[in-house]
Length: 142
Image (tube, rainbow, N blue to C red; front, side):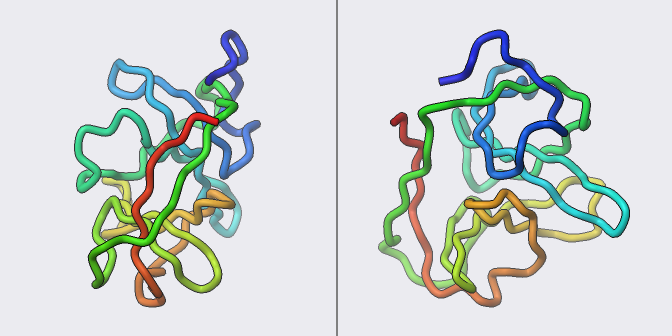
């Protein structure tokens, strides 16, 4: 899955890439995400596996110089959810021609929720207003 000994600074890994990072003392498969500001880029990790409770998923800020490992042979499998209604934290959903994952925003943020475009890794505001359908997601080893 990860390329052993291929640890690189987070800033050098493209948003939307799968990576393995050390979070709270354990190795976790994550999606690299970015939030672009006017004059800066904030780097984040979205924990995917293992995750004890998806309803507590939150953006995890990472220093641009923090060493993380690219992960190959990983993708997300998506399927229509049986339940309808607005997406909750931890849910994927289709909206505005893209697929997003709804997360709690970081503790330093003024926003309550963050929405990560699963194909680009870009963090967007308030995308659940445009939700078309909820999706079930799972990590797939290719």
